[in-house]
Image 1 (cartoon, rainbow, N blue to C red):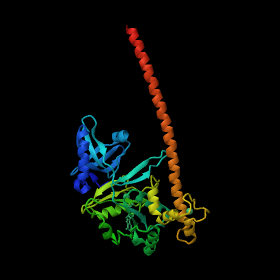
Image 2: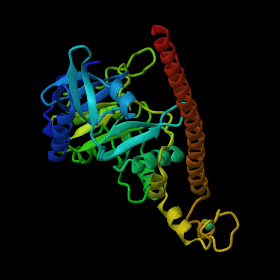
Image 3: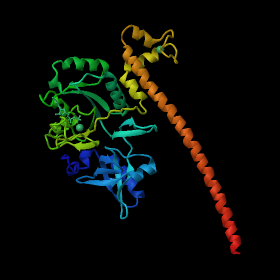
Image 4: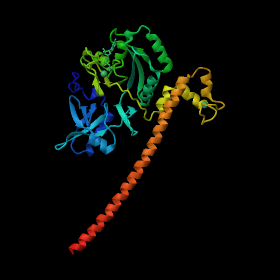
Length: 372
Ligand SMILES: Nc1nc2c(ncn2[C@@H]2O[C@H](COP(=O)(O)OP(=O)(O)O)[C@@H](O)[C@H]2O)c(=O)[nH]1
Ligand SMILES: [Mg+2]
Ligand SMILES: [Zn+2]
């Protein structure tokens, strides 16, 4: 890949390093053995992180902090580093996150995965060259809102369709209060408006399926300084540089963009608030139902059903809203079951340890007696 993130070496200030982070790092430094500086994570992969350290980029191990604190350092995190002769450079602390774009990690065990930390805006992106998938868009908006950052919707490849105003209107109805723009790198439509979001250390994450033009937008925003995509392979017409890592890219004209690989599975994590913000009309109606435990089925005085009858709320949206809550309900019960299991496991472990301790003491007594 020709992106060569490590060569960018931005200053700490342009990465958003501020006084609060300095005092946090100063405190951390006091208790750390082998303090080796601070930085912001540019990329993570398999137990290692590429860290921008201010004028430099260094590779640091991240696995030990994960096992010690349970926090997996993520792209966008602010960190302190330590260096020891035997294990080299490693991450010793992760600053509290301002915001965190989080999904449920794929797999059976319910656990969160932070896709990007300390981001200001999230661009939820869809290609206009394919049909709009409203459920997918809502799901992405839920995790975007739940992150604490501000979501935007970008409809890409506007040059490929003549009727993008219609799509913009659909999304504006779907996501009131979320700014929606149709853009095109080919015609230049709205590229300047997007570019204007990037100033100072403002950090924007691109979210959306593979092939919708995220990396192409990064190339454009960086005026070609960063090359995230290559020529298209003749054989299968796929871009040669499919993005595989989540990379934090400081732009030469200010602002920071986080390019991500297309993620198919967007499981929710801790996202009730994100659901409420994505479905403001339903959330408001719920409060107005006569019964506080209204299931919005056939109860009298149900404001949700009233608005459904009036056509203010659509059947599809209500169904999807229920499904998203059900996903979190299921996850919560999985988590409880999981906690119970690990609790009984640690109780068994503790008993095992006590037994072992008793045996060791008994053996010690025996050997002492033998010696005598
Ligand atoms: N027509 C058109 N094609 C685009 C536009 N932006 C990106 N593409 C094409 O879409 C394909 C996928 O782009 P890429 O940036 O790799 O998508 P990513 O997987 O989201 O990073 C490439 O062939 C791009 O040339 C656009 O505005 N208009
Ligand atoms: Mg890409
Ligand atoms: Zn109701």
